[in-house]
Amino acid sequence: DMFRLWVAPSGGRDRRDVETKEVPLAKFDQKTVDMFRLMGSKSKKPTHFYPMAMVSYELCPPPDTIEAGVGEQRNVRYVPIGVSVGKEVENTGGKESRHLFTDHAMEAVEEDYQTLLKSIEEKAGEQ
Image (cartoon, rainbow, N blue to C red):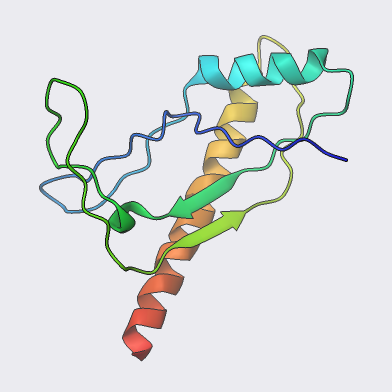
């Protein structure tokens, strides 16, 4: 009986670099991570944090430029995607070292993201 919640601590706003055509991962927002850690520590039930990497940009990519206004035109495509849930990140560290938790989670996501990219590229090469 566990409640599960997925949060994009960078806002989920990764955009392609128009020069390199790569999609860099947006860094986690420290205040967002701190807020969820605080809620977890105040919870009456144990809270667990797992890093999750997801390669899905090409499925429904945003425009390369950000335009003022509401909504963006999106085109859904049939492409391979990848999702990886890593090992639990211990909720340790006080106010002075809170960045260590965020840094560790971000490193885990970056590592898993690169592994997913490589796996997708290898599968595409087999076809």
